[in-house]
Image (tube, rainbow, N blue to C red; front, side, top):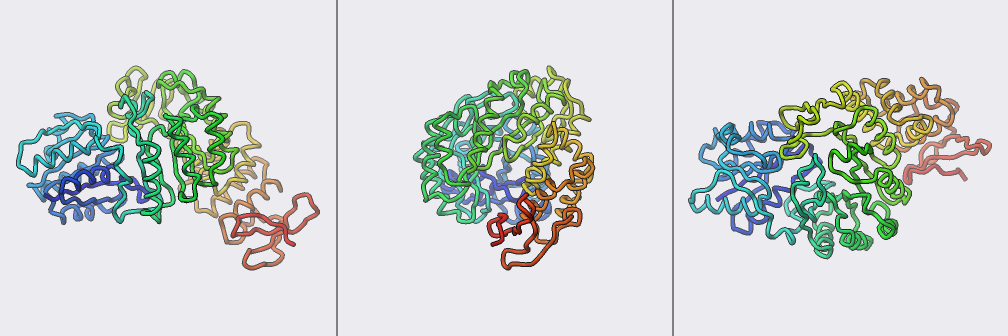
Length: 512
């Protein structure tokens, strides 16, 4: 029996770990299995053709909030072309569906809720043997998860691949489906390090190995053993972990400080600094302690730090969101402003009426308004998110933006005003963005020599074209020094000594 496992990712950089996890036990059971993977931007007719050409007996669709609409459409058309095939839906977005969902979509033959490795293998075995099979199967915890391996054994690889060392989460955040697991199952530190070493050998093109664990350091000692192991020379890639920053202690900081530069990057979900909001979503973090830990991690200088906020949570109005933003900004290299989605099965969705939630009726169920924040205010936050992503998270304007932030009493207000100044931000090319940021500084009376020095450095760090006129001023090109590039006259208060930008090291160096 031939089985196709199909994934449709949000972007080309992503790969789907779930279909790879499902493939391994199916392979072990002797089935002919092939993975087909696409992205939302792929042409729909080509994706349908790639599925149809397989003439498979069984098609498994991996469903998420970002792809359910497309999956339903493709599955419907595929069933009309291959009426004898069996179509199976699974994944987080359908794990809380029931008979009415199947009745509304009769082209779906079977639905798997929860973990699918054992359930899908059992279902396919029954189908191959001609046995009657349930329409809806509830998956059990995967019996062989502890030694599942790295799963990337096909040709689809990129700069970032995914790894799962634990399932479940010990916390009960009201917006998250992982809170429903009730427990955590984790591979041992020794197994994890052995599998990461396999990644090093079998995925040479991968630059980042991203752990999908919801809270990597839930077991402090296990996390420490893994982090210590990553100090060894056999590990060369960057490993991304989502952590609970409030669990870090002095021993953790000492280990993290000893890691080679860029060996790891850490992501911490702050979500909000409003105590009432944190209580409403069942989080117990001390926000000030979390932010202090993030700043300490930043000060180590050997890793990239991400922090997350979520807009649309209970008890958080625009003023509260502003306070949260201002507290977190500057404690991380990348501030990710997310927007609450009321996922099926989550506690917040079950209690949506309590908070007056209005949200999208179709996936991804993004919040439109609640009793604390209006639709108009959420639209303001969406635009601020675009501005932060374009100017701050890109890293292309680090010094000039930092200068403006230092001159501002509120980073939130700064980005809001910059957003008003750059209403067409999505259309800005890189040169235009540098020019627009300088014009914004000028509008605030901040286009002084200190700002220009920062902006010139930002430009030279990423661009090879001549400086835009607004950044040039008295900044004169005097001569060229191959291969380092152009020499500029820098004035750092030392009598106009000459410095140049070394493009190989991205450093400004004194001309000898």
